[in-house]
Length: 262
Image (tube, rainbow, N blue to C red; front, top):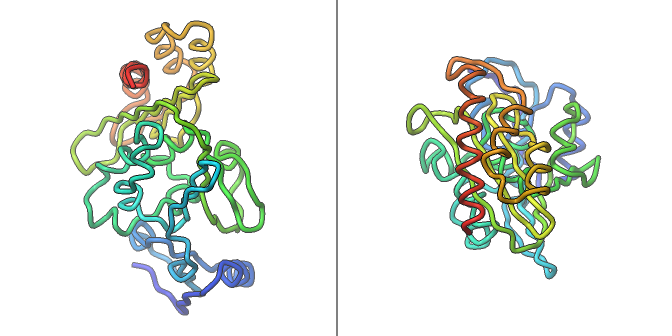
């Protein structure tokens, strides 16, 4: 159980950012599903629910903007996301625990925390998403995942326009459990993007496999094996690194076949 001395609900992103910088031990509240499992003394809890970041908006050029406080349930049911890249973002969150959980969990919390077990980060990475931070500005999701964590505030996630084909697959020991591994692939006019997550590290792109498909789009099996060989995997209580590597080849092939069929 954690203990909070002061709890505030700012009405603007600027106010949130100022409070976050003034107190180095302050914590952002953006769903409060994993924080409540910790034991900590928090002098200042900053609730983002009053900042108007719960939106999915389509711009005139086809770009989609997902506010950081969008719930996973909103991503799951959004007509815009169900049409985007074969609906891989909506599909990726549809099996996470239960509807009650998805109504509370937010996409911003998952992305900003860089959860290694995240199902939603993987398709976002495959879709070449960008993130907009309050202080740092806009950068690619891939660059954000690689940089050290900073005391900044995630405002929104930006999905590029385009009518790409995509697919998502994962494997769990049981319904409601975290994924042992997840894979997302997207096929555009310029080539493929393949992301693998829950390794159990955070999602990463399989560049070798992507280059293999650029040379020979029909070499699905070889590309799947290449992805399994080039990425790093770890062991935890759910699966060993060796098992995840073998699983990666299977899920990559399955996902690429589905992507090509769309």
